[in-house]
Length: 210
Length: 210
Image 1 (cartoon, rainbow over the protein chains, first blue to last red):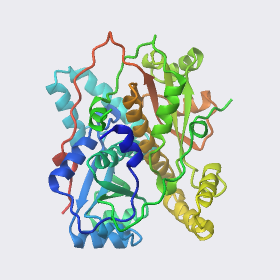
Image 2: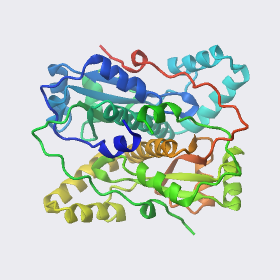
Image 3: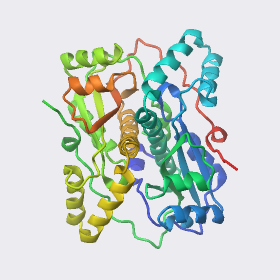
Image 4: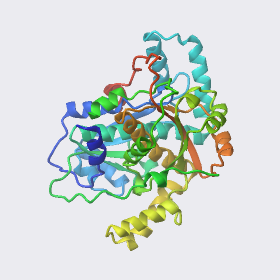
């Protein structure tokens, strides 16, 4: 599918066809394509909980302002952003060094330089921890939404939910922030898709502060 | 350009051709295509400072760990994430309501509901303010990087810079966080692009917490 078509046809759809499942291989393809997103020092501080069963979705529904798309969409993802995914010893951080070494990089010096830089940039305040986690997971989530559209799937990113309640209900470790929930499925053909919403223009976006 | 090709061919390139400018109409197209990104309540809390002149780029270079791509790339963007872009009276918030009304929506009731919800979700702590700003601006920046690739441009997102120093040097109001700098241009044909880095697989990304 053409890139520009994907960008324009990706819409946050409110109504999903509850009868139409997302096949597992397609979901896998969507996630692996989305995972091409970049991240600071390639740390990839993102994870997904994938909910498909009715009981889990109903538990989430109550924590998410009763947004019916949570039970209508065949798949709902709890998108997780790891605020500690820059620390020495964190499994993903260590895995990244291991993969760098495996690809032939000389990591001895780089390792301590990266760990120091990451600690300063991402770990030196609570604000920086959350900015690191949410910015990079934002890259990933955007890639996921576009990858979904390119594979014929529709999505809806949701902010209206109780972060702490969701963490408690789903045993999510405290280091994670939940920047969004993502409904994935097929647009309900009986619903009407609204016209695209207003977007800021180039002249709105580009600013200067003389 | 095919979507999947864009996803795979988008790479963070370290070396830009300093002789090859980005034409203004192409930059505009990149930004307007990137602006199709979604955001919570369509608030679009993102802005860009676009640096092209040597003096501005040299000023930024000193604040950004002397990363030479800042002066080599023809365009460097300071990507801004607005932590207050959910408050009543904020120009973008009010513009969004105005555009909703212009498109025929009944906004009287929605207005107060959205303002209350946004205040609770995005404004009830410093962490939430920054999560809101960085997550949504992450969506936008990812869209920008992909839009750039689809138009034949290359990019490099950078985290290695002094946020406070950059805000001071460029008169950036305090409500903005700077989640990244983005170099934009053309890959230097004399440089060698490294093999793609490791990415987490589906099985690494999908987690559960029994």
